[in-house]
Length: 236
Image (cartoon, rainbow, N blue to C red; front, side):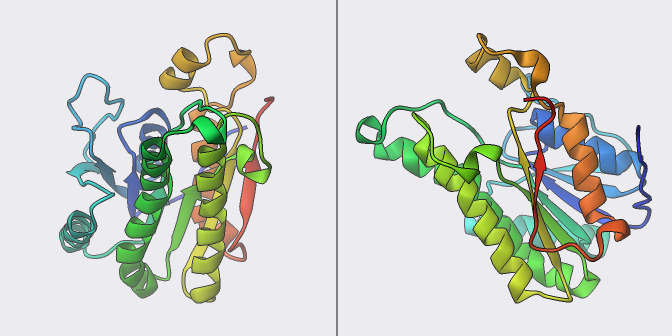
């Protein structure tokens, strides 16, 4: 069953918008009437970009690991749209890794930069606008953040940190800005299909379904909900 929410006159920033999940989130909010600021470091016309631009979706190229660029880009978005109501931190990546003793520190740094630093910087510089709007943040954690496992420790740790960042933002902005996270299992994306070709892909979570949960968390229907980490496991 599809549930719709009305985001008319709302401004939604979606990071990682050129990827499979980010593009689905951007489309969901655009379809619901929002003005969408689609943020990515990948150009929107790149052959790997999945984002479809429409009359309510504007693309902004921002390096979310560079604080000066984030501050510049968020200010540009707020000036262009008259404020920001919601931030969806989708930007992230996954690597099937090695045991800790074999993991290069460069890979550790990359995963924390892309999965955590991007969400931290985007949240930091968007929060003043969200406080004015009494808006919300939704970030992407992961089911694998709930426990340790073999071979992808830095990824799990970075996604567990997303939950703590979310809880901190919720506590610091109680009654003003809501902050929540979603915890998908394996997301059905082209990259995951390539990297995990031997897995049972029929049970993976569709990005469209995750986008629906994110829309709910940003909606007025979720107004009592903040500091939560919502499982989105599908059949996986």
